[in-house]
Image (cartoon, rainbow, N blue to C red; front, side, top):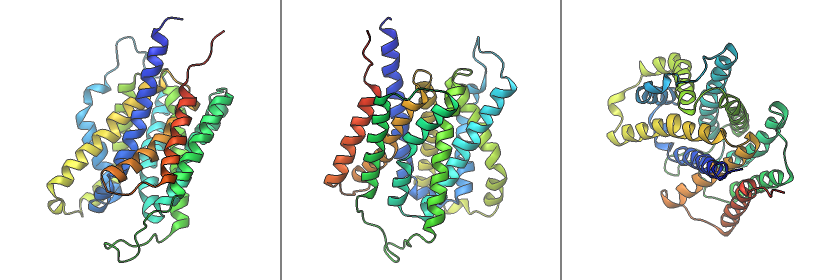
Amino acid sequence: MNTAAPASRLLAYGCLALSMSLVGGYVALSKPLVAAFPVLLLAWLRFGIAALAMPHWLRRAPGEPPMSARTRGLVFLESFLGNFLFSICMLFGVSLTSAVSAGVIMASIPAAVAVASWLFLRERITVRIGLAIGCAAIGIGLLALTPAHAPAAGDNGAAAPSMPWLGNLLVFCAVLCETAYAVIGKSLTGRLGPKRISSLINLWGFVLSMPFGIWFALQFDFTAVRLGTWALLVVYALAASIWTVWLWMTGLRHVPAAQAGVFAVMLPVSAALVGVLVLGESLSAAQLLAFALALVGVVLATWPARRS
């Protein structure tokens, strides 16, 4: 086999890691947006801004076959589950439970993706991928269980989580949505190009969120939003709907879904790094150990297999 295949696989690994890192980064930095906009209005604005930025991605590439009814159905499910519902469940869930609980639940993403890829895609889970999934889960779980400062009622005006059981349930639903996103995305990459997938699922997200968005927009005072918040919204929309989706779909073309799921470890890890580097939070020894375990998991998943 020539050197082009290993090179393309390394590029795919980079795309997957960068995609999940961007997701963790914009999730951590979206707190001001959730405070400024209702969640459903924020989702609609996100999809709308991204739709204005990539209408040319909707065109069919030369040589790409027309979409079948099955492909159209998969595109809709990819947007509904992995784009629209994931955002809603995650934003509402984190607002109702603690960040620690959410992190523990999100640690199950790599294992969930591996099981789903085995069930639906018939992918074989090797011992090394299984160990990588274990390292990812333990690393993120340790990161999430590390004691952190939780705002109490009256601390900077933030209230303690009001309905943790419902928040935990919504975060777990977000895990299932992310799992479906990885598995369905693997099926789509064999039929459509990454740019077209990104534009189509974003357009569906805009349509799905439109009734809620319009209803909230009619009651919202847009003049009260500061210029810096608008700028953050534009960056959030481009990152969430264009950059991360295109990077993920590009990587999935060359990597099995179970192996790609290990890169979900970068989501909470990058969110924690943003907290340390941007929001001024502290980093403990347990968190450093969690980062090391996460790195070991990624290395196990991406190390080239020995050939006879």
